[in-house]
Amino acid sequence: MNPLAGLDAHAQRLAGTSLAAMIKADPARARDFSLRIGSLYANFARQRYDRVALDGLFAIGEHLDLAGAMRRQLDGDIVNPTEGRAALHTALRGQTSSSQAAGDAHTQALAARERMRDLVAALEASDVTDIVSIGIGGSDLGPRLVVDALALTGGRVNGRARPRVHFISNVDGNAAQRVLALLDPARTAAIVISKTFGTQETLLNGGIVRQWLGDDSRLYAVSTNAQRVAEFGIPSERMLPMWDWVGGRYSLWSAVGFPVALALGMDQFEALLAGAAEMDAHASTAPLRQNLAAWHALTAVWNRNALQAATQAVLPYDERLKLLPNYLQQLVMESLGKSVHLDGCDVATDTVPVWWGGAGTDTQHSFFQALHQGSQVVPADFIGVLQADHAHAANHEALLANLLAQTEALANGQGSDDPHHRYAGNRPSTLLLLDALTPNSLGMLLALYEHSVYLQSVLWGINAFDQFGVELGKQVASRLLPALRGEGEADDVVTRELLREFRARR
Image (cartoon, rainbow, N blue to C red; front, side, top):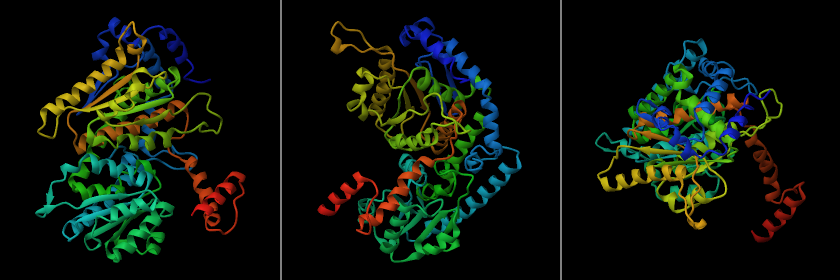
């Protein structure tokens, strides 16, 4: 039996009740549907469930033992059965469990972190002014987000500015060309980040950068595969490890964060880890009703399965978090984009919605029209930062006013005799507020989403830690490379025609 089937009855019961009416009938939910964990505050009062439906959601969480599932992950149990692996990314940032597996993982993580500290110190003491980080997916999105978000927190080192970190991910040669055109190879170092050191895009871009540098002594690697790294020409003393028990999209907290440590300093990187560890401690110990990760996960499942929402927006009202939607697209959609249960049987309900978004207030002038008056309801996570790190008080007040206004307007709407000026309202949202944007608070926020994703996978009975769906396109691309070079032909009739068009125009 589908444990989520009971949600339909709650959705039908509430179908004729607007969100504004729910809040009017129960104003105390503004306070009761909120949680604060350290510097992170969450308010779920504008989600389209009442107390009875919320009780039903938490009852499902109890029935499926979300607390036990969280403990099994942190203890190093096999939570990725299709690949026979644990998922111990939490051990990278703290001692989250007394189990032998988690303890061993944490010991390895600490050793790798000390090696990374030494490499950071050596590069800080060198004449290197720029770092090029080469990776894709989980080897790029997390470091890129954190470096961009916290760019002004790094300060200076040895009396001069910290190295500037640049990122190359796309196999499109324009990506490498645009980055390298602005740099001096004599004052640049590069990091090639690839878990297997077999990722086509990363190796091609790494080859471009290696040739451009003209000096392999400033080339570093992060990988699980020491042999391939050595074959690429990078010695072991300039390689940092990864492990099979850390998935790529969960690897920011490992040596994949090397670019973060270079851009911000090792102490700031460790503050990021400490913030994530604080959320780990909360998610693994708080009772379900006071557990922010569980509440966020249950809300996501409610919106997808009870309200049939096909997409989910994430809307940071802070320019420094503009890359957060990109990061969450991979974290959420690669983890939860599954249509079979752990036992291989088809899932009987919808799983992950399409995640998308952008930074306010820019997005208010692009796609918010559809959020307010479009025919589809799009639940949203709004993210705000209360304390500004700049001197422009009027701008920050306007930003926060717009944040509050949008969540209110989406929920309450506005009537009008003119249908073109009518706002239906009834659009659900969660508001997440950081006291300030710091390495610690950003670590907490990202760890919250990780735990929510895992608990959603438990609720749907799917595997959050494999990603076989990304492989087929890569395999077909490898088969088509010779055909693009005129060495053979494609099997697919449409591809054959497209290849003829390619050849005629190149």
